Amino acid sequence: QVPLVESGGGLVQAGGSLRLSCAASGRAFNSFFTGWFRQVSGKEREGVSWISSSSDSTKYADFVKGRFTISRDNARNTVYLQMNSLKPEDTAVYYCAATLLDNGLKYPQDYDYWGQGTQVTVSS
Image (cartoon, rainbow, N blue to C red; front, side, top):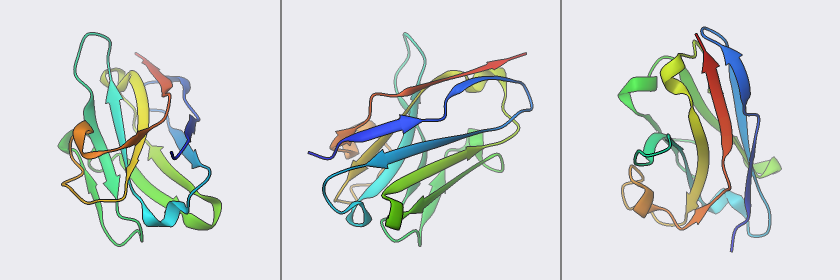
């Protein structure tokens, strides 16, 4: 098991920023590919961004490109999602996920470990 704990969510006005953190404990986090997903009640969980274990590769969903930045600090066993220029449609529960294998990283089924999620609400 790789316990993951997200933090940093909250309520922000449109155009504002938040930084989400995903802290891991236990096994060496620097071996894991990590992703951020989000989910709105009644809708499927969708991928937001992914980062390789060594940070040499990052990818973003089209709807966050240019606004969100994923990064990681393996010394702190933490992955971050900096979210700028937030829009009301970014409102969702945000989850981090981790896996040892690169099976594409785009879909929830590509990951083995999940956090509990953190709520992000963007008001208009």
